[in-house]
Length: 115
Image (tube, rainbow, N blue to C red; front, side):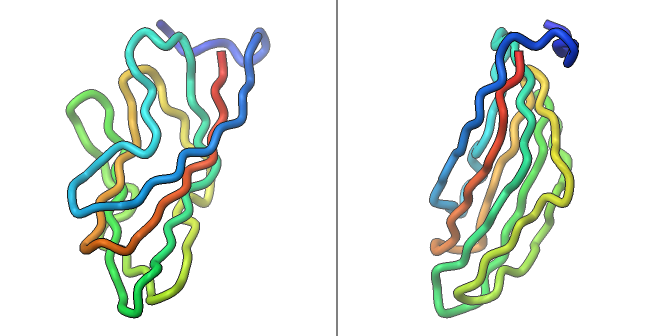
């Protein structure tokens, strides 16, 4: 499906996706093939719940190709960071993945489903 025309939207749903970040890359927001939607990701918060600094990697994935949004960004101990300055649109078969340097990071994505 092509991205919907914003002038003729029939659906706008606000969503949140929380995730405990691991050392393996995993989707925090994904728009599967055949969804007939575009996802507008408005914010991506990363929190470090440990007493030491940790690193985060965030990638935009289109099909099998990945592009870095954040590469080895240090999240200071017991701190949080919003990694998106502007929204990002996910078309069908797009996703955003998170991967941490160690256990102790948490992620929260706030997004809208548009159709």
